[in-house]
Image (cartoon, rainbow, N blue to C red):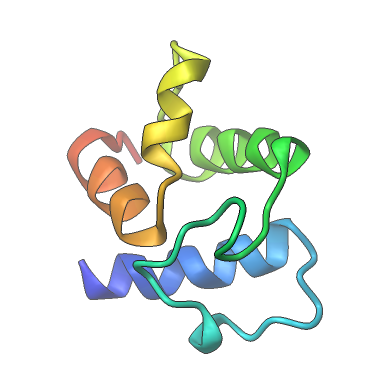
Length: 85
């Protein structure tokens, strides 16, 4: 799981072009939106695409993405339980 968390941090930095953020600086329990990493709704769409392309997981209910994208640890658990790739 730790390997997946590290991988996700790097994928998020790359996919969202977070030039001022190093993957190791991201707190895996911090919120991704609002006060934490400060992502917005466009970033959420990018994360959905990332999960579909990289891990083969299609999010059928966009409202569920709010729960999945709470933090990197929550994302990692979701991916570990649902990945097809």
